[in-house]
Image (cartoon, rainbow, N blue to C red; front, side, top):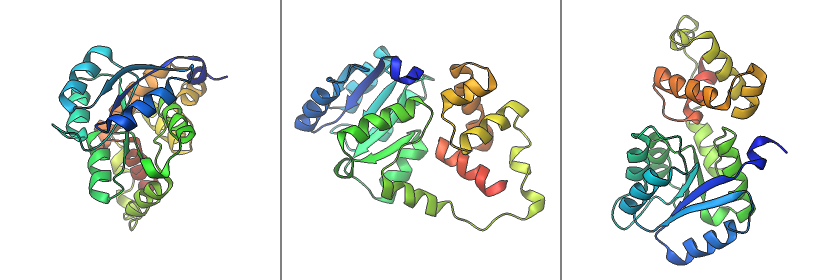
Length: 220
């Protein structure tokens, strides 16, 4: 077993459909590697609870009765917590997708197209530094990033501000290495890799792992 399988992953759910919330919480509660820290039907109560409990992962819907899921994500992200957001929603349109990714969500999965085992797999993937998405969503994101290459003289400019270590990490991530595997390869801690990733996002002016990988692929 790897570290992400052995450790208990704390999870919070933000979902205004009470029936779906109850069903999902019961099903996830049967997995010994998950610990549910909070169930929320409204955005404002979610912000308060997540700020206090600091779960590893939040599964969040986009549309809530009081404020949007995006506002919840932005509020928590502004607190510099290590909590990661995985959107779980019925919306598969571009507007909801890109708004969620730009706000800081690391993954986006569609309810009707995703089984419970796939949801649990997505949670583990986030913990390992991945960016899980429903198949059709992932195809759409990749299509968006298919652009004409920049002139050769401009290609390296985007990476001038990255340190040697940050470039190493970005190269490993783009090759498909999960965050924990990157840490093992470079003989540094998991938290150190995550700190480097945050610095990479800031320097490349991106908000998510998907965007960072796209910039790398377009310019190398």
